[in-house]
Length: 325
Image (tube, rainbow, N blue to C red; front, top):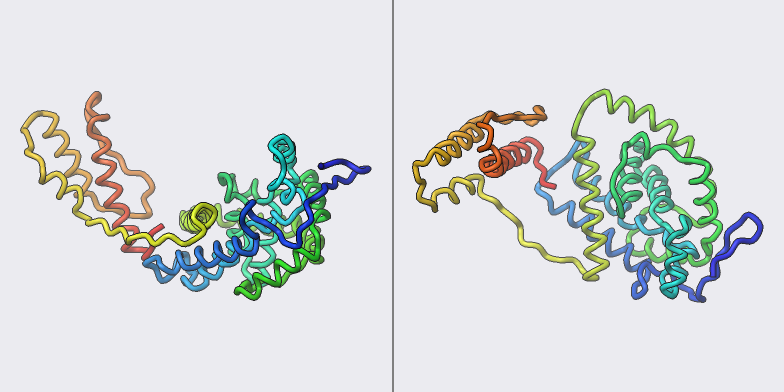
């Protein structure tokens, strides 16, 4: 049962030589599965590079995210939570020390920085892992860490059994993990993290001034791959083979051809709006497109127009960036 001794929180945990990600799954197995799924999923995308990064480099980045994304579950707080009674589980869930995303993200940040020596990629990986159970916030907000955060993270690190953690690292390293870390390095990384974020904020502000949408696209692309791989392994415990979705660029025209078009006023308006959309030159650097429609008839027509525009934009985006998220 969790308790407080002096100013330090401690928790009693079930005796086991292994760490778990879920009640029925070892942490080493889950981390390895997610890392390999995420890397494979990225390599299957029809792209050679994104935002100047070759696909192979991004696949390795996703491997790091997969291996590190749940390392924060190594704490005694989370291990106790997995096997607690419903009453105790509710108490543990309310404690910030039981949450695993932030600690996992800091570990990810330093592992990626060690390997790539690229602060931007390190921060992307940090963001992807930190929010893999939630939603993104502003990057400047995500780069700040409070004294309360530091206290919670220190408590979590103090409640990691070094022998179990290092055994886990040894096992995933034999499975392909390229990171260099141990339980003993975690306090040093936490101590250095606020300075790392202060330096990164200057880079992030420069990026903001460039008004380039591609870092945002890359971040969400990597995020979608991690959460899909994580949920797939947690639910199915295996990779799901998905058929490649290949939408014909003329899909709307083909669908329309199956209907007899009545020459009503509404049909003429629909066709006029549709032709306006499909005949518009699409520039992916333009953020907003508009179409004028009579009041009262907009709602009926707008869905078809949005679908037509979405296909046009997707086709242009893929053609120019060789990427599908």
